[in-house]
Every structure is written in C-alpha cells, then in structure tokens.
Amino acid sequence: MCIYNTVQAFKEVFLIIFAILTQIGLALRYPKEARKQKVQGSVTVEFTVLKDGKLLIPKSLNLQT
Image (cartoon, rainbow, N blue to C red; front, side, top):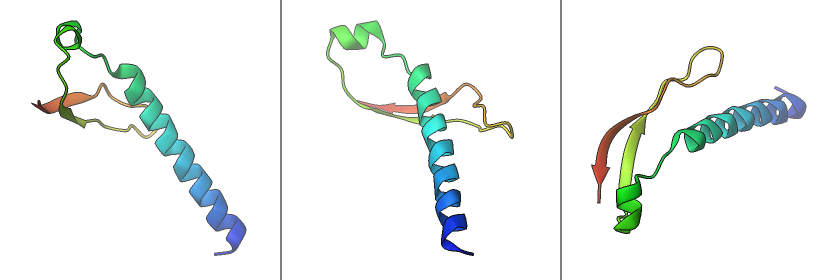
C-alpha cells in the first residue's frame, strides 16, 4: 500500500467517525430535572451503523451517577 492510499484510508475513517459522533451528539438530550439538580454521571450507549452510514436511534444501556 502506498502512502497516498494509507492517508486516504485514514481520512475516510476519520470522516466516518466524525459523522457518527456528530449524529450521536445531535441525538443527546440532557434531562431537564437532572440539569436542575446538577446531576452528573455517565451512560453507555449502543447504536447500529447502517450500510449507508446512517445511525439507528441510540439506546441507553445503563446510567451511572
């Protein structure tokens, strides 16, 4: 594999990851009540990437506060 192909492959992977993270970011909604109470924590999210690059609606698996 030549350097151009390697750089092009990294660029494509980066763009795919960026698009996925953008879609996840747009889907995130912080609950109003949690915001009012200043609750912080983490959540594990599961999602499926379709062949056309679109995401199915992310699903929360667990919430840790």
